[in-house]
Image (cartoon, rainbow, N blue to C red):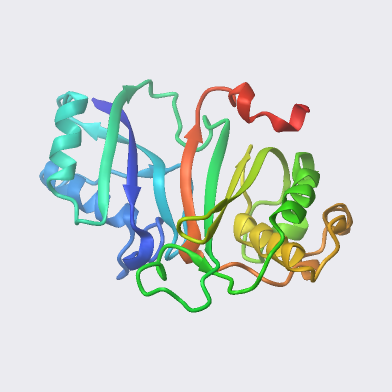
Length: 261
């Protein structure tokens, strides 16, 4: 007898070698599974994640599920038990018991990633693990205009890094928002999509920054999409600025459905 738990977890990815378990490496999945092994007194519990974030990538709304053996533990007690065993760079935010048909990846309707870029002239030591760095003047209005061409259903092959194992690269981009954080001198990029390919957000950000700097024309995105060629966008923004912000398990709210405009 097992109980399936769905939990939302936040973590600072700086000191992790990504989410997915790797032998002899510190990973988010490995850390959680170690705690569950102790809780079950030696039983292996496999943790599934909604996305396999890379080394250095953070999460505010990563979602996991696992099947816990034995007597059901109330969700609030499960949160307390796991948080008491976590290092300071992981925290569980909520928990629910779900049907065994629920799957954290296959049940997802879409994901929201956020990317933060510092425009400071020099790298700020207090931002370096949580932002990308781009010390050049950029035109945000140009980037916003260009980003509109990402909305809708496209083959995003040109924005997928080599190493990804997914063959079908057609995705629907529902929402893109780019705004300036004046107080912190940063640009915040938000993307909501039916799914993301390997390094897709980091490649998109790198291209939009090139457009904002004037190194590419504003209307270049349709050409790059049509090319289906990763060589069209060679740059990749660093992992440090990327956050898995939210995972949708219901339909994408209408306010984020800019693809219908």
